[in-house]
Amino acid sequence: MRPSLRALALVPIAALAIAAPASANGDRPSPGAPSAGDPLFPGLGNGGYDVQHYTLDLVYGSTAPAQTVPALVTIDAEATQSLSRFNLDFRGDAVGFVTVDGRPASFAVQGEELVVTPRNAIKNHRDFTVRVGYTSGPRDIAPEDQGDLNKVLAIAWFSTPSGSITAAQPNAAHRIFPNNDVPSDLASYTFHAITPAGSTFVANGELTGKATVAGRTFWSYEERDPMATELVQLAFGALTVKDRGSDRGVRLRDVAPTSQIAELEPALAAEVGHLDYMTDKVGRYPFRTYGTFSSDATFPFALETQTISLYPSFLFLPPFTPPVYEPIMVHELAHMWFGDSVTPARWSDVWLNEGHATWYEWSYGNDKFGINFEDRIHAAYSQGDAWRAQYGPVAAPSHGADDIAQMFSPNIYDGGATVLFALRQVIGDPAFQQLERRWVQRYGGGPASTANFIALANEVSHRNLTGFLTAWLYGTRTPPMPGHPDWTVNPVAAAAKLRPPALLRR
Ligand SMILES: [Zn+2]
Image (cartoon, rainbow, N blue to C red; front, side):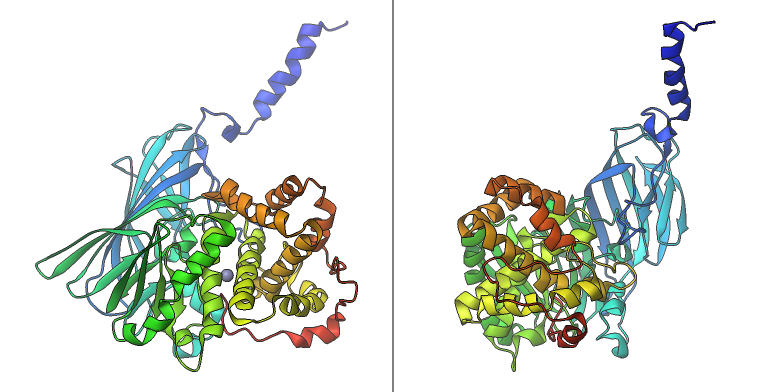
């Protein structure tokens, strides 16, 4: 018997309805994913919601650099599916309670996941508020671990001689507070802290309140612009905040240990010129505040914590001189546009942070101190094959959560700048400058991917550069450098020994 057309049409639709996973049904609550799906950091991030705002309330009970900090995080989020439960990332000390929309929720800590089951399911597109009472806090780094980047970055919130600081890039912000720990979920922040009177607390953004009552000082900061979790800065201790007024509409303030502020001042004052330099290159600074945080701890990196870049103080003191530290200051400032305002969609896109920051670091070194830019590109180019063999292609690093020091390799920094140079060789400087400005204008305040960058390069140059850039970014061999047929790439075995020493990861 011949089935009717109507019956034929109905069968596949009915089958689809049965086969569809619950999460595809907008009304049926299901668990949010326990991962955001970043291949380099499969444990990070979560699915089912988008964070809008974090409020942190911290209590520093004493002046001790290492201490347990009782804290409360309030997370305002929007559901992106109907949720029966959802995860936060957390690797602090302990969780005391969790509420969802003011009602106690059940929770379980499973490894680095905090699994929250609200009393009532959360409907798709609904705003909801999660509160978590927890403890975490700055810890001492063992002296033998202070030079080990992986160990320092895993601690993320650590003591210094004068107090404590945070450095969470790339995967350790959830050591500090429960959150959705991926750079693709940006949010605004409010920071409240209670400290002993006489101590100073500094966070990203602007100071909005300070009052001392009965031996305790209450601090409030607002970071109104979107920020990724990895860029949080919470600094505490015997610190002095130096107000430098405004430049180009940007409030400038620096922070340093009170014992060091005078000797650091000549170095820190250089940042006004750096802001002018970067603004002329790529356009308006993306935030309201900027400044330098110089710490008296000895650690092997500088870090672009949003609006307040972090450095070890030794960098600004003899024997180091302005040609050493000023380009590094420009590197961190450049990250405010490249990495902080425009965040990497996935961690394999981190060359977009470091390649651009290295580009402006070397440009400034050339323009201010006569350190030849093209010589540095040429040197990096010659090591391209060795770096690709050792660390993976520029936009496909072979290490992530397993070895962060290897992930942030010279191929991401110098190799990333070399890709930008090859691109500029092809499209010319006017189009390259237009691309840089349009990139930060279009994607500022959110994540962007390597594919987005290739598409914008095509759009700005009115050419199809997809094949060219794909070879440079994803190839295992270094392509010929346009305009420099004499440049050669060292053989892998020989070049591997030539890795240049870096003063700091930056
Ligand atoms: Zn950097």
